[in-house]
Image 1: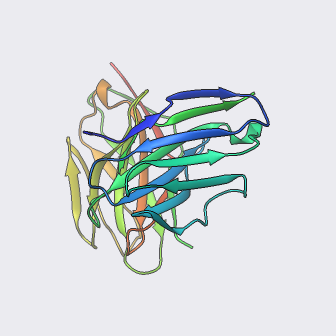
Image 2 (image 1 turned 30 degrees about the vertical axis):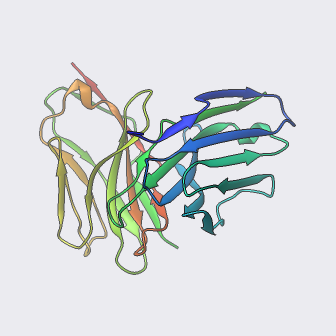
Length: 113
Length: 112
């Protein structure tokens, strides 16, 4: 597509439930990144994919967080047993050229109640 | 480790005022530097970038110069408009561009 697409745009879930967030990068972009933006905070790196592999998982906050990417395209970020502190905007970005910078999606706003 | 520090907001200016948003960084190696902008209700957009010392990035009237001696990448605009109201993020990327480090963002409010 023309841009990075994320779904859902908003998600309200009950504490303890699992959620899946989807990112559809720009076609042909080999690198895909997940960040989260908590209220009033900057961007926090979560995970990075080059193709289908994730060489850097260092940012995942706990083992409740996991992500996968299939076919070098769509990525899913899964949060198990959600907690209130997981509430944030989850941003996905993709890039195709070293040094060019990311293109970001509009994000998924997750609210855990 | 690598990090970015930018001035806290919000910054409130009148239309046509001069804008400076300070950004300094700490990095090993030779990072690339970026400014991203997030307009209300929208995702992040790349505003400008510089990949080596003394490079000047520019776009939409905004400029920033990569200053290695002061480890800075301050964002400037000579005359802001109401439509420039947004949150601005300074960022650096490691030499392999595998990870970006973002500042906490500076909210700019421009009043007519």
